[in-house]
Amino acid sequence: FKKTALEMGGKNANVIFADCDFEKTLETTLRSSFQNQGQICLCGSRIFIHQSVYESFKEEFVRKAKQLKVGPPEEKETKIAALISEEHLMKVDGFVEQAMALGGTVLCGGKRIRLSGEHADGYYYSPTVIEGLAYDCAVNQEEIFGPVVTLTPFDSTEEVLKMANSVRYGLSATIWTKDIDKANAVAEEVEAGIIWINCWLLRDLRTPFGGMKQSGVGREGGFAALEFFTEEKNICIKR
Figure 1 (cartoon, rainbow, N blue to C red):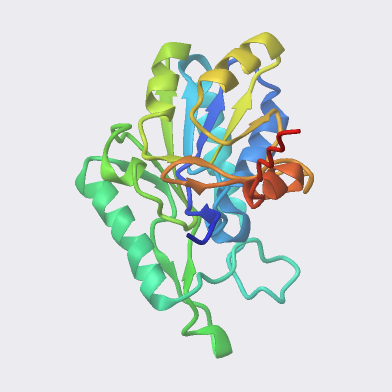
Figure 2 (figure 1 turned 180 degrees about the vertical axis):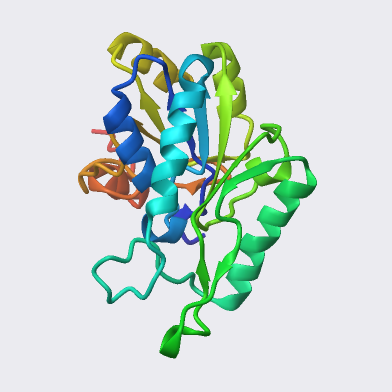
């Protein structure tokens, strides 16, 4: 049999507790939601926010998402460029339509953007934020892989762990809190191969990279990759 390491995507949770560094969390969550138009397997597409800060965080997050400029990648001001193909754009838009059909509220975005000139036929989609969906609906369970995120409030650690672990994927997660003991306790319970605490996409290629459940098998990086592809041999000599 050929040993094969597989990285198969994710539906990553971003858990925001009330005692987070609000501005740092806001800035990084915006980046982890929409960098490369959300076409990164490590993007945090499910944002869980503690009920006590939900409204204030939502207001600021949506305000900043609306400010992200959609445009050609060669323009310096552009923050959201084109999706990979028209077929994929239709898939992303289909998930947004499904979210609305399920009773979700589109707080911003939710539509294709038509540019002028040589980019008129480009596959541009506005950064989209949705709330009001059940944590176990299809939009919160399937990987969209576009500039679309959902916001969901939570009251307790037990509740957010249930929601975070409800998906078939387990690639990465981000936890925001100033309480390092709480962060470590939650990280232990989240079913994901990579956990970032108070940061995102901070990577060292010597550390293991890979996911649990249907996010893949095996690990890339450092000794983890060497061990995965090593066939150990037992040689026994009787003297």
